[in-house]
Length: 172
Image (spheres, rainbow, N blue to C red):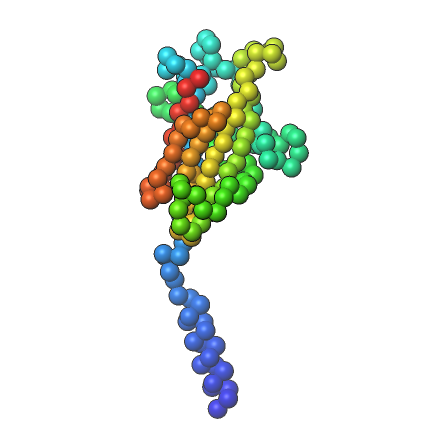
């Protein structure tokens, strides 16, 4: 009799553990396409155009070493516009637990990176900027909430916005 009791108990636990709840999954929304343009609208990432940058490097400010490179790939749209595609890689730090921009439960995180643009072989021609990405984290979503470029907001997303590729355009 005891043998049947243990078999039934194991079967019940097995059925309970197989229960699927799609609502408990967290949506992750952190892909960003970053376009860099000048005030005239010229693509500054197209190295073939006069006045554009010939290259760039990205360093994680919160990295474990002074030089903590982050791989941000350069891609091109069908309209021949270049952009930097950022998926992840920079360390995140806790921003706060509750804020007016993120009410309720959850926490906010942020990453900060230094982007060095190269214009020529002369190091004094390099342009150094900072990119800060703020994230909203709740039980249902982890998403980019705000992007600051040189401490100026260039992108923001509402808490209930759908998951999408976040397009950030920076005018230099």
